[in-house]
Image 1 (tube, rainbow, N blue to C red):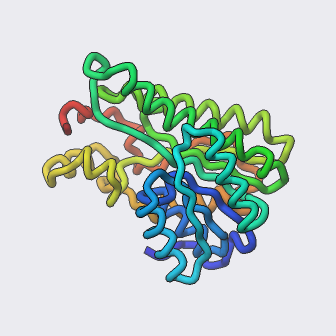
Image 2: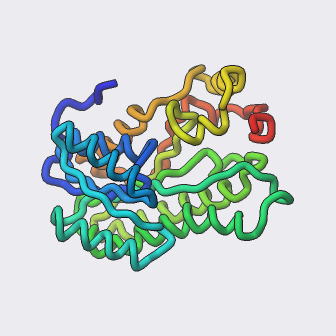
Length: 266
């Protein structure tokens, strides 16, 4: 699906995208590149990053890669400096690195819980904190990828619920503290999104997919393009006075209480 935007809204800007080697993060990076931004794709698997960067480059965009774990603060710092050295000043930060696995509290180890907290929440903090010196100027934008788990408890997802609630409040706190420096910080909360690893795991059969769709008022999955267009808006001058917001893009799923639990779709 083509972008609803026609102008090159991000010409001359640079974006640093964690989780940029696949899924929603990759599509956001592609959309930024389509609109003129130079993008640094960040993730743990170099082969995925290389494939994503190649796709952007073959379409006429500019992309580079940095393989790292967002739990490693010095590695994040080094990748940000690499981005500045290669592309110039950084204008856009997307915190999209995340981890997940379905498990009840009594079936989860302390290390398992900590791993998701560290990737989702600590990783977002690390990326934002390390990027502050680069973003400290009017027009800079941070987007953190949240989840409905932040406000809606879901069985077998205690780790994600805790992590994403933290991401939401961290992002809104950054909007207060860093607003005077010109930095805007917002969250995007995706709903069930087609062609993502998460939905392949949580809705692996046509029957389960139909049940998930039935729990969404719009009766369909969202698309990565729709999320990418929302991210593009939030990074553009059209959103210049928006900060501290949590944008829910879930077809209305969070407005109703679904009877379909993670336990049922495992």
